[in-house]
Structure formats: structure tokens, C-alpha cells
Amino acid sequence: YPAALRDLAHDAPPLLYALGDLALLARPAVAIVGTRHATAPGLRAAHRLARAAAHAGAVVVSGLARGIDAAAHDGALDAGIATTVAVLGTGIDVPYPADHRALHHRIGRDGLLLSALPPGRKATRGSFPERNALAHVTVVVEAGEGSGALITAAAAVDLGREVAAVPGAFEAASCRASNRLLRDGAHVIADEADLLTLLGLH
Image (cartoon, rainbow, N blue to C red; front, side, top):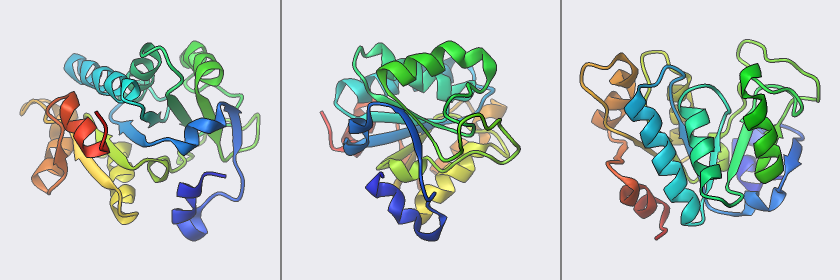
């Protein structure tokens, strides 16, 4: 059981289902999250940050959703080493969204899939488990108003974790809330070096 999840206290899941390399849970971790409706620059940023973190020895944690999550998983996997964990809002054997079946399979083979739900469970509204608790740092790449990434960031703050964000275009709806995180004191991630410094890696 991941020691970091014990920080959730009474909200910690009583058990987890896993498929993949459990040794990844002992390594430094960064959660890279954001909107499903990402811009092309946002997707590139998530991919580059995840790849750099993976090369430096960190594990990239995200939720397998469309947009920023998928770009982060892909970036970590493209580093060529087992460095990504997907925390699922479904049973461990249920790819969601369905068109991420190949990515789900690749992470199960080359990384780690985690779920607090029993096998076979479909996605339901609100069934998005905490993933920020696994990570030392949470980076919001892009988040619009009402984005679930903001809930992840708020929970990370509550747990005493570091929260960071990537500056986005002033006029982009997908960046309004993530830019506001920066205004309110989140660490600025302007490039890969900023993330590695925050993680204490080189």
C-alpha cells in the first residue's frame, strides 16, 4: 500500500487494485493534470514536462483522461523507461475513455495502473480517485473554469504538497483557471528545468 496515501487519513481507500510495476510507488512522483479540452501548446507542454521528469528519474502520475492526462502519460512512456502511473476512476480492467484502450494496455505493461474500485466497475459521475496524494508535486498544465484539475490542485494544497502551473495564453478559455493558480501563488513552470528544480532532480 503506498505510504503517501496514508496522508489522506480517513479518506484513504482501504485497498487498491494494481496492474504493473509496484516498485514505481517508491520513486519521486509528479502529478501532471489538466483539461480534457487542451490546446496544442498545452499538449506539447504536458508531453515535454513528463518526458523530462521521466528521464530525470521521477514517476509521472495522471488519470488517463483525454487531453493533458494522456499527453503526460505518453510523454513519460516515450522516455523509454517505466515511469508512469495511471490512477483510474474505473475498475483496473476497464479502459476509460474506451478509445484509450491501447494506452491503458501500454501503461499496464510498461508502468502501473491503480484503482480503488473492483474489477469490472464502469466510470460513474464523480468516480475520479485522488491521485495528487501519490505525488510530491502537482502540475496543472491547462485548466479552464470548473476543471477537475482544480480539485486535484486544491487537494494537493490541503495535503501540504507543492502545486505548480504552466502559464497559458491570456485569451485561451482552457488556461483561465490555471493562470489564476499562478496569480494565487502556485509555482511557475516555464520550462522543464523549473519542474526538475521543484522535484529536486537534475
